[in-house]
Image (cartoon, rainbow, N blue to C red; front, side, top):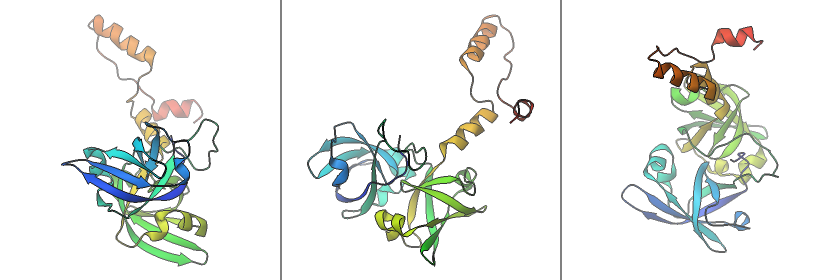
Length: 231
């Protein structure tokens, strides 16, 4: 698990491309401390596994699915990337719950300065926008940010100078692609409301009925259930 608090900007040192995959070698400094094979590192918000490392860089495999769903396929030698190590059990929870599993990409459609802040407007698909709420959390290229406004075609965040300076957000231009991860809590709530999750006792009850050739009954949390229990 990550928190969306970028630790440093790394540099793509080399890219070894396969037919539908790639191996990234990334130069870094701060995150190299106490690194081990198998560690999870968020690279532009994508959870990758360390397969090899030296004192100044590490390598990670990128599979076909990841290249299809993210902007990693657009990286080149010399590209900058946001880096964050997985959260330690005794670490500070500075951002929000970030899984490192990107939902899709968005496009920077507008950048506007507002005194000491910079507004970034991101256009993206309805499947991603449905989980974005004003004043909620969104992860952009691995950076935890607060949604300032949202419409049916895009959303906007207002970044402080510190965030712009220590992440690759400050390098973005209109038309650039960014990785987006929705707040995972919203997706779980939707799943529960749809009745798509069964508890162990519900599964056992279903199995008992199945063995007795009884008709399966639909179970799940409904709006009526939530209202009746004070939600």
